[in-house]
Length: 275
Image 1 (tube, rainbow, N blue to C red):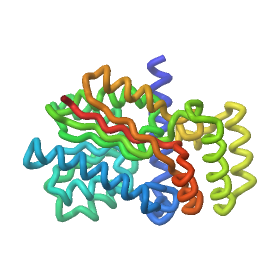
Image 2: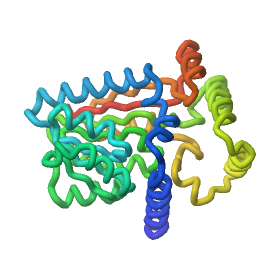
Image 3: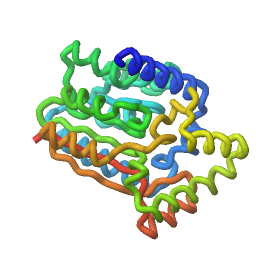
Image 4: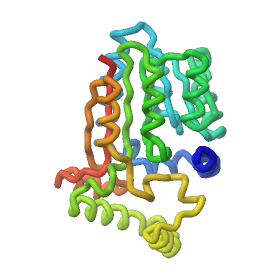
């Protein structure tokens, strides 16, 4: 069993590294609603400001662990606010770009090329502690996201915080109309992206429970989403105060506006804080 889990973890890390190696930033933003849409960017910015304001009241220079740093938006904001950051990602190319763009803050930036669980294990062995741990649009890449969050929480300093953002809610927890609305909004956007026939064949294959290596990139997006309630319960079990926020997110600007107007939800954020 352990060997199987390690093999799956390695496979997912490799699939993500390949996927993001040559992914242009413009194409990433096109498919990243929390960066593309002003309403979601405002929500995200507000959460970040609250988290960093709290951290700054506890320590002069917050220490941040950015899991799944990706294109580096969170890391760059944290550095601009004066924090020290450890950025973790499986993609060497994205970390290289991040180091290049943040060269003026090199003394406050450490990068680790590894999957999240491996990086956390390394940092634990080094005795590191963090005032803020972030997982932005990241948990859906991790099959054992509860295990990852449990281990990440163990790295928190007193008064430390965890912030997750932009992960799909567990699909079977959504009301039927909500699920249908989200599917329509995605399909209408997807029709304009090309490769429609192959995309339809992938969808039908996944519906039959057949997954290929390429399906490991967005591991839980193409399965059953991420269990937001289980995450909230985990933080409570670990003695943290947590706040679960549900909101709507889709790639299409038109459907994003409509979804917000009708009160649809399909995505979530959790902010947890040590007492």
